[in-house]
Length: 60
Image (tube, rainbow, N blue to C red; front, side, top):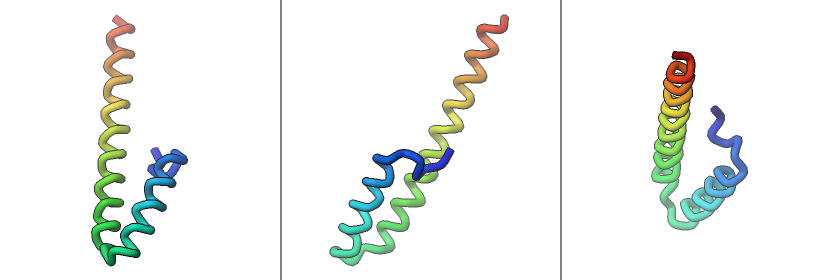
């Protein structure tokens, strides 16, 4: 699952980048990016687990 696949995510990243350049918080921007990618990965994993559990439930 690609984090930048969603158009809204790209929009948010651009807004954060512009704000971080003006405020001088480039490191904060990078760290927020890592956090957002990690949360997106966790979300994808949880969705896969839920799908697998639903498949097993329907298969019984």
